[in-house]
Amino acid sequence: MRPGPRSLLLPTPLSLSLRALLLLCLAPRCQAVQAENVTVLEGGTAQISCRLQNYDGSIVVIQNPRRQTLFFNGTRALKDDRFQMVLFTPRLVRITLTNVSVSDEGGYFCQLYTDDTHHQVATLSVSVPPDTPTVEVKQEAVEGGEVELTCLSPRSKPPATLRWIRDRREIPGVVSQQENGKTVSVSSTIRLPVERKDNGAAVSCEASHPALGGQKRVRHYRLDVHFAPTVRIIPPPGILREGDSLSLTCSITGNPLPRDVQWTRINDTLPERAEISGPTLQVSRLSQSHNGTYLCQAQNNYGRAADHYTLLVYENVSVTTMVLPTSHHTTSHPTILLLTHSYAPDPRGNVHPSLTLNTLLLSISPSFPSFMVTITRLLSDSPPLFSVLFLSPSLTCVLPLSALTFP
Ligand SMILES: *[C@@H]1O[C@H](CO)[C@@H](O)[C@H](O)[C@H]1NC(C)=O
Ligand SMILES: *[C@@H]1O[C@H](CO)[C@@H](O)[C@H](O)[C@H]1NC(C)=O
Ligand SMILES: *[C@@H]1O[C@H](CO)[C@@H](O)[C@H](O)[C@H]1NC(C)=O
Ligand SMILES: *[C@@H]1O[C@H](CO)[C@@H](O)[C@H](O)[C@H]1NC(C)=O
Ligand SMILES: *[C@@H]1O[C@H](CO)[C@@H](O)[C@H](O)[C@H]1NC(C)=O
Ligand SMILES: *[C@@H]1O[C@H](CO)[C@@H](O)[C@H](O)[C@H]1NC(C)=O
Image 1 (tube, rainbow, N blue to C red):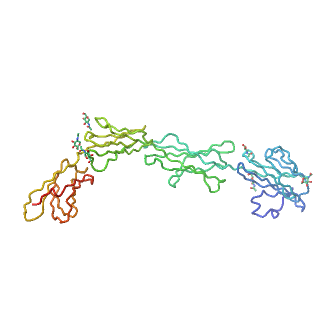
Image 2 (image 1 turned 90 degrees about the horizontal axis):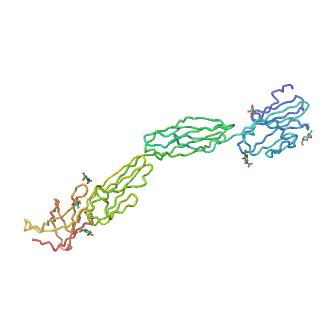
Image 3 (image 1 turned 120 degrees about the vertical axis):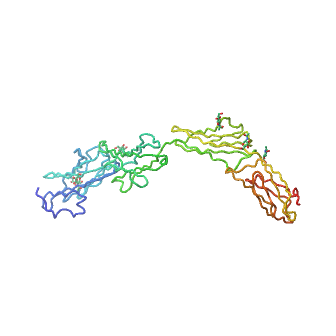
């Protein structure tokens, strides 16, 4: 064979995708065969094409990579239904291969039997895109420790690229690859220090691959950081008196979240009327015998925690009034002394009752446990009652005005 002049080759864009044209000779009717390389996804259908030039009816043979004849001039030679001859024209012979697997890879021979036997090879490459990778955790993560996460893509070709991402930033991993026949198993391992605030934090592993284009197969993973419980009793607002109901809720954290909460009373048993439902302890109709320190406790495998609440049940308020003789007999400003019995300060120790008397204007000088109240102006149409409001509106004492005598 004499080498053909370069000018007879196909124009550049086409020749990129085509295997170089094999020129058999320079004469105008010289025959040529030309094969195209093919890349196809595993499971897909490959088209293997042989272009002919100046075909004169010679026998065309197509062989697989093991040089077994698939088609002998258009007639099936090998019993494999996945191969079909789809076209046989004087310009083009085309076969298809369905459900391509990696074992089908290799060079397919397009052979033209002439005086001089010539062939070209179409190389079939099979691309295996990765599945969504999996994430494996070596051992459970405990706060203050480290977690080791491995992202695994068991099968791809060429090897997938794995990237760990947290908060849109890449965490560099230690990558290893292992060949399994024609495909590759890829893994990427990272180690992260973990605190309890990291519990539930999202990390993800992305697999990219030429066959996926710009798409990525992403596995999302939430960190599971184990930590000892914390316990806090949410106290009821204000003060509690006999007859009130107590409701204490224990707010618990922890991973795993403690399943049981234990309520106890220090140095005593829980009141008979105590009802426990989940994290809540309820006692209806409080009495002073319920005074005490109540404890909420919870535990998991990583530790235990407790919080306490000291219950003080106050007596009901009772108020007695006394009208004091005023020093200024000329004024009509009676001063009332309210004597409270068992008046309870609010939890911060403040004493601040307020008095209302509708249209009456009052001045008040609190001095626990009694209050001096001076009525500074009495309107003629005032109702005959006034009320003393203590910390909670439910503790209103209503005093009949008629009980007061004005000097
Ligand atoms: C076809 O594939 C073979 C083997 O990979 C390679 O040597 C050849 O250059 C390829 N031809 C074209 C036109 O890409
Ligand atoms: C080969 O097949 C082609 C197309 O069917 C036909 O034109 C040609 O005559 C055949 N050649 C021989 C030698 O049978
Ligand atoms: C495709 O080939 C695989 C083995 O390579 C086989 O398990 C599968 O059943 C085939 N699928 C079809 C649709 O023939
Ligand atoms: C429980 O009893 C012990 C011993 O009698 C005493 O020292 C401790 O102060 C008590 N605790 C409470 C909260 O009453
Ligand atoms: C309960 O606590 C209140 C408020 O400190 C106190 O006045 C009362 O005496 C206590 N009662 C008993 C039975 O301890
Ligand atoms: C305290 O007041 C409540 C509500 O007014 C009442 O139900 C309860 O019996 C009173 N308790 C005592 C000991 O007087």
